[in-house]
Image 1: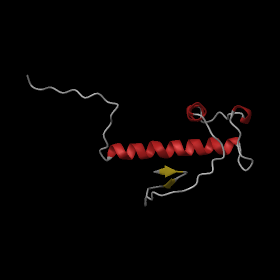
Image 2: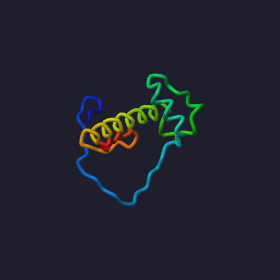
Image 3: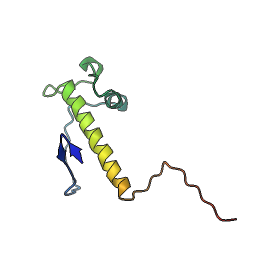
Image 4: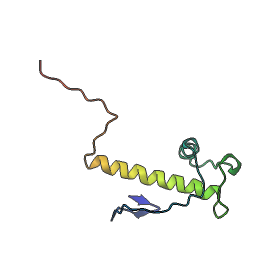
Length: 95
């Protein structure tokens, strides 16, 4: 996976309890808007409250980075033979 010119790959997995401290709570609509218009900045007054340590631009960049990683991981899964459930299957029984 490439991110900012560097190859990334999953080297280890871990499942366990953890704490996540979100800087904001975006709706799907907010995130999708950022993905569909990557160069258009969303005014902070249109977003849910953002913690003071972060800016709307940082949130926008993070959403785009995560989307890029998700697309690359999805592409790799399908290249490795993952099943796509959104495609129709045509079966001919030979009768």
